[in-house]
Length: 438
Image (cartoon, rainbow, N blue to C red; front, side, top):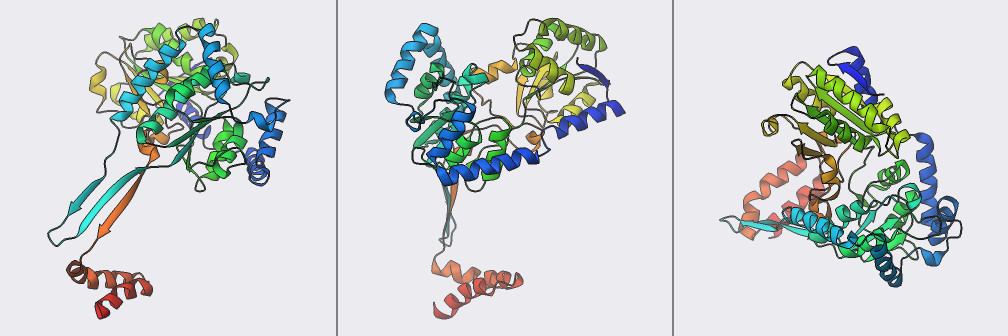
């Protein structure tokens, strides 16, 4: 179910290659389908949204159903109180935690002057509009309400004026009431019933009902991800996310029951999820593997978890802590948990991870839902160069320059020469004309 590898070894290298390729190979068939969807939405607008939604989500879907009304949101509050009386309170607490964390990420405009009167600076401005894609889960049965919090709140903190969310409707054409209530609580102004690549296309191009946005954020399946990749440049995107992953570094102080539970918390996401353990304690490794076998039997999403464990799950047995850190940085996981005696000593060793969970009682689901840091994280080894979704994703930095006349004449010749080094004569003349006629 979950393979045990010695590292380094030929077998471990084969697994690492398979892990690396799972998020890197472009499916040309899917890409061709997505290109067709994007073009249909660009040409036909709402009509394309209705046609695709009828075909894949709700057979009786109509154009008037694309946008959610205020009355529907009010009704959702009534429904959710019957579903769980504590729902709204918990959502507000989680939103407060996420808001507090992201407030610390705010950037300020800044300015500097030189003695010769040159004025330089940077203005920080939020983008004007954001579209957040929220996966609906299995026919809307598992709505990712946490993703509403993680995408809308940072945009609000950044100062974005217009925030919309999109999620695929259930078969009866509704959205889960928890999704609607969470969107309202977090400050989304518009909610659309639309999913997959056609939702991304609608956010990018706009339709009669859907307003185009400046940036699209949020995770999704391979069709959503491919659409974001193809539209990058026409519209801003956050990250090109791949399947979920967790890597756990554990020593003899780790509890095998905890470690197994945390591995399974990622394995149940989808069949491409990657749960990985690194340890230098063979007894722990064997204990975790047995505990995974025991716990998976009672999981509602057992079949999904089993396939993920079989294809992309692994336990690496390494020689020591240094090799463990080297391997972890090489894998560059989305989530990295430290189940070790002195976890704070590892902060200097870990360089590549989307998020770091420190200690035996800091499991990854705390970050998914409640603690405050964002759960939209780089996957498929992109943590080597990418970061979590944050306030920064919704900000633009506009450079400011002012040269008084004397400062211009001081630097003019240098700029003129540099332009001619690059063979750009018009650039050079922009300077020389001022020198002659100023």
